[in-house]
Image 1 (cartoon, rainbow, N blue to C red):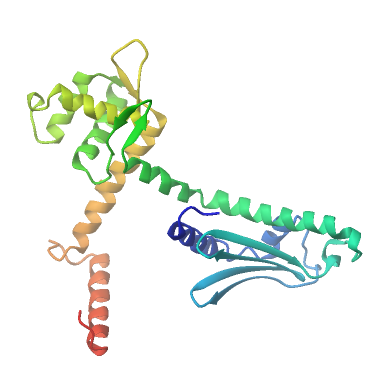
Image 2 (image 1 turned 135 degrees about the vertical axis):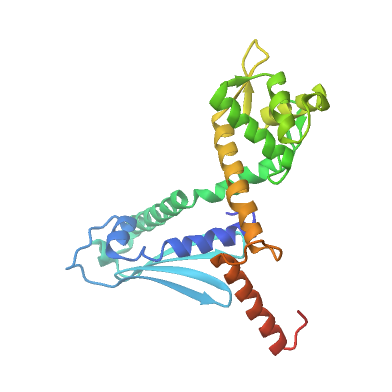
Length: 277
């Protein structure tokens, strides 16, 4: 089951894109736990079938098929159909049904495990959204750490500085190093403002207070978040938007040209279809 339809649809589209080779003999043998060689009879393939706008993924092993699709925007449904019990060296008598069920469920589970490992990045969606919302821990509430907030970016830069230079830090250290990044003097930041920021970092799990001291240190989560947030914001988002901006100082980079070409093509299509741009 998937908690959000949009997230589920994105997840399944990525599953399809990354598993187009799952029907190859070397891959399908892992799903069904069966040895496949050149002499193994049958068809081994992956197909993507679109019915309207709802795609489905089909994996064939001999006369057995696994079908996956995003059902009603709520669940990833995986169905295994065994059309010939001889594919698994099992007879066709009714008493063999429990063994066939076991094979089918095991194949489903192996396929889902592979897809889960390959797409744990979507767990990051929840982690990212947690940072964008206020948090409450032990009756203490802290504001969100929004990605594009200049103060949040400055705080994360300060955390990386402390990690490289001091290792640990105090209220005073944060005040002294944060102020210049915000274009201010330390005296312009009140103790209450720094306490507010330290609470945000701590309750979101990016820092922790060293017991019986007034010093703090960055956590493993804080280190990874700070590196990713600052690197993505400074090296990708800001530079990328500068390149595609209509007021870009250098309009020659390939991405800028591609954006303009796409915009021109869309406008021509609008005009051809007599639509308002």
